[in-house]
Image 1: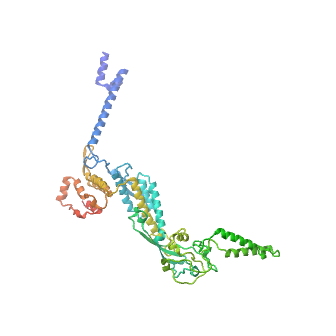
Image 2: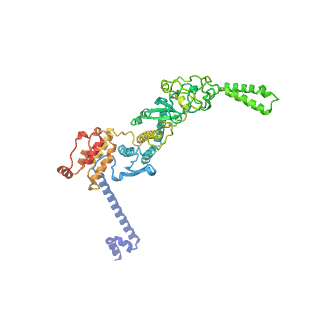
Image 3: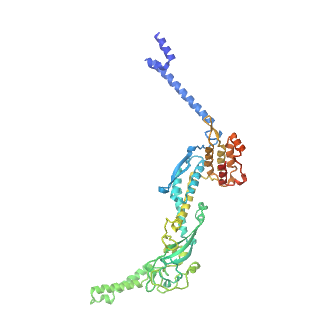
Length: 498
């Protein structure tokens, strides 16, 4: 009787039997039954969920076999560009993994790049390149290295004789000097600056800079100053020009040693009747006279006045035929710096561009020489860096490639105001659909003749039939002439009207 009661309670209420009966065997049976039940239930739920996912697409479109991942509103993120008071916040597409499909990576990269270019005039190149480098999952060390090499070549090109043309000489207060002689002995005082024009073609330095126009600017460089002597000898300070004859240092030192020993054997020095201090003074005077007469490696011109340069026609137009020589420090070096790169580097070893009147350049002034050069180099830096980084992150994809355009076209065409998600029919707002279009368009080329479709037609097809009927009946919108939609901006403006 007791056994029958146990079995009856087990069948009618197995869960309560687990707590009311202390038999180990009974508890084991109840526990096994409970585990089996919940395991089967969990497996069944997972199976049904998987079938639901395989049946319905999770985008605002009909089911599709496209391998490209869908996007939702959560794919937009905010990033901070710049620092300090000039920092700004941009909303952009989240960066796909470097293993993501090429169209997805291209879309995200070009979307942010287009926004950053709009702020190129207000933000520095460092802020713009950092924004790209920090947002995308790619090592940017190679892009940095290549960019630095290109910028270095651009700086060299600014002071390349092939890109320079001479304008005029200036004195120390920035006034033009009307007459300068080829002969250093006849040059006026205070020749302090020389004004150049330089024109640099970025595309000739790197093909990735083909979209940046040639850069032309006028600036001045400070000339080395030399004090005059009785026989004009500018060797005192500059040391930049080349002597008439090659300087043999070993021969000159041997000759100097011989002459010093001969000077020390002078009778005035060897006379024992002369006081020691007078003997030292006589020796010093002899050696000073000797050094004054001895040629050195820094002697730029011979003591006999005469033309030292066969100047080029360009320099000849700047110089006058004659002038009155002065006595104050001035430029007495070579005039070949417009044609000879070696001479230019000797005269201007570290060129610091000044304003065209010889005054220091202030980077805080938008029209200053320093600021204009900085802006030009910044544009080039951002262009090269973004090009290299896009190549490393996106790959060989081009926005104008037929394959890329086709993928974007398929993705836009599948967008719909009514779509299926997890077995349910969902109707989104028109604003949400429009935002999806805006996120897809940036990767497309500006020339819409390469598209093969129009945004207006795709967007109109994505609207429900009743909405199309209402717009048509109420004459709320008039279809444009499709022949006029020749660029991306025109198509976007027409899409906004719709």
